Image (cartoon, rainbow, N blue to C red; front, side):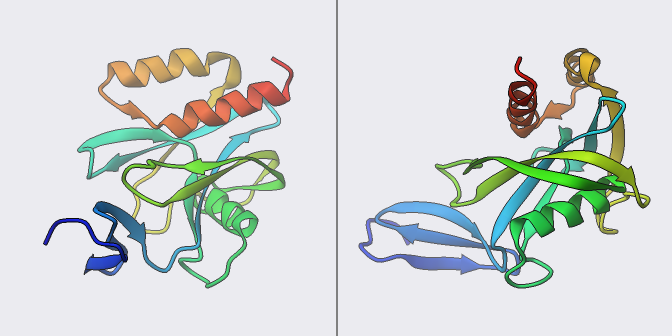
Length: 178
């Protein structure tokens, strides 16, 4: 089924995603999710917490900042609580401070998804940080002064760096007055 429609319709809905059609435009929505959060976490030793995991849609390992979904576990979950939960789940760190610094679309031509980025500070190790059981996450603690070189080395290995890494680093450096 194709063509222009004046009203939105849903040609497909699965467990986690739905395809919507509105005024001739097709896009994807997540089901049972109220938002997406991502966190740039910097330790007291000035190390950036980055994760790597294989992403099937890309067929490659992706370097990312910790991130996840709000509202997928408990309906109406506030974004800051989801950020705290995901940071602990993926890195094993809890943050005393979470500062929201950005909100914007992940891919405006593909999805209505909006990502909220937080800077996480005053970190304390509080767990293992291995993901939710379905994820195979590798945690890296990279000195902030070496992060550019490290990211280039991962790209040289064929990994992809998620654009949120650079977005979050921009806001961290801006908060430091650089």
